[in-house]
Length: 323
Image (cartoon, one colour):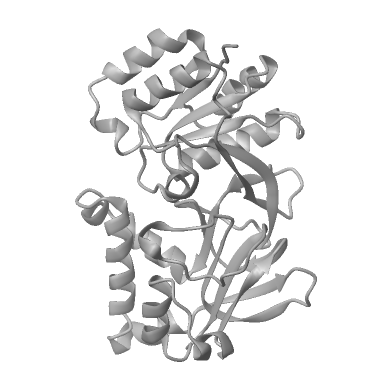
């Protein structure tokens, strides 16, 4: 039995900007009204609302992490909670952490051809992996929740700002740009003029699960629902099950360079796990109060007028793999 799938294509994504238009013509010919150029805000919501009305059960997303986040957020608004579509993520953006974990594995015309073949034999959901996504809610009930898979604050936000500078972003692939950002961030610790500012962190109140909130200055905070990161990096605790993996690093952490070397290589040491400067684990929900902005899937967002945001694991999506 033949299946239908829609394709949402972001022409502004890094790798898509380099194309000559042949893919768009091919996709339009193959999918007709189920091929969409992505739009921001209400335009994208209108596209996804139409897909929900037509009960489209598979959506391919051609873009980076920010595009995937935007589409998942629109799906959360428009689809019934018990009828979410499966997603095929085609890596074409500045950041592709989601695709590195749950991506389709192909992009461009090769991905379109393979998806069409699977659809023709009713096999789009033949190989899927299920993941909770990370939902961010604000204290303002009128502000819609945003879905993503990787959250960061404090020094992570500063590092992303560095990575987004044109001098870096226009010269390097984003994975390398993030590496340059980390190196630049650590380099600032060498100079007395910036060392205390960076190591001193940002004031934050963090509540993990049902634990009492803890207010302190934090050098770094990260949370994710992904199961792996590119290059073997894994700064989080190795524990099974769903939920949110999180890492918080206090201001002026001990042995920061040694810890960074271990965490970026996905290795854990006894002193790191026992250090009060580094807290890692897995939970179903987190509450944050920030004085500034945070990053979700490479995009910088504000934390609202009162700085309060709430992170939770779920809903769960099926991601289509080409295996």
